[in-house]
Length: 416
Ligand code: ADP
Ligand code: MG
Image (cartoon, rainbow, N blue to C red; front, side, top):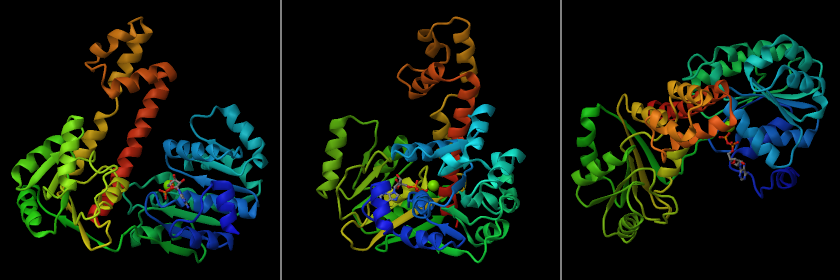
């Protein structure tokens, strides 16, 4: 019967691993703590029960505007109109309008700050609530990597809402964080689910070492691990440097010509070379099922990227290795790469200032020392057209924060 709803509402044929058990517990009315990897499909586990029970509003607390936007978009794409949000992007009137007509909605997304606004809490307390969902629940714990003080009040707010059924979901929760979540949300003997993303045939290894030891260790590893092997680096330059340093290795990255890439790729596919050193540009659509090892010389930007990249090992079902080499401070490379993808605060301000004072758009890139082909200019140009200065500044801040927090999840994995 849940399968029917899955098909009818979400258009999917089957549940992903772990989803069904979580939904069962929710449908039974239990409090739930679900720890599932990024991309596992946690949203569905708190959305689908709403269609089964049809018993009031599902309130979802989420830490970031960009996450809320993303989820609302998905829900609306399904044709669901009964979804609203209370964030800094709505005017007071819009918010009041939503609060006055809560019965119209199935899902309400908001930040913990918004939930704590007294007249919001009061309005919600007067309506029938099916469930309170705390997404990214690790934010509640001081032991987590992205503690948010506003999350700390959620337990108290839940009480004010009449202690509705509560579900906490997150991708990362070590034991200490788990205990914090249960305690602070006052979850009542919650059903707990923990799912790891491990593919059993891939042996996962994390090695922490000093940055001065990395090259030496890589040479050893490359000698020891079964091949063919793929080595991922964060930058093109590093991919080239490592390939030169290692025997029987070629490099591959997005800065190469299409012909060169095709050539290198086919040599690797035909086992003419044992090692491919590459950036994340390599792998999409590459069908090579006998890759025995994937080594990460640097951490990728997200856990999702990591999972995808190591997932290229052992496609034939035979044992394979995934080794992550981590040296303290490695994350700075990814932070740098993230920062590079967005216009700097002072550049945004300068662009708006110049534009508002009559400077033509064509002159702006040069003023900002940006290449017209640079995606950063593309982004800035689009913001100038669509957003106010304040919105643009906020948007970039929020995007960067989202990217940093994804990097934080990756860091958690490297450090556990
Ligand atoms: P997360 O666990 O990281 O919060 P999401 O809930 O955002 O993951 O889901 C990740 C993606 O997986 C979404 O695009 C979602 O539509 C898709 N998805 C979720 N459940 C299923 C399913 N049973 N079948 C196919 N796709 C699914
Ligand atoms: Mg999610």
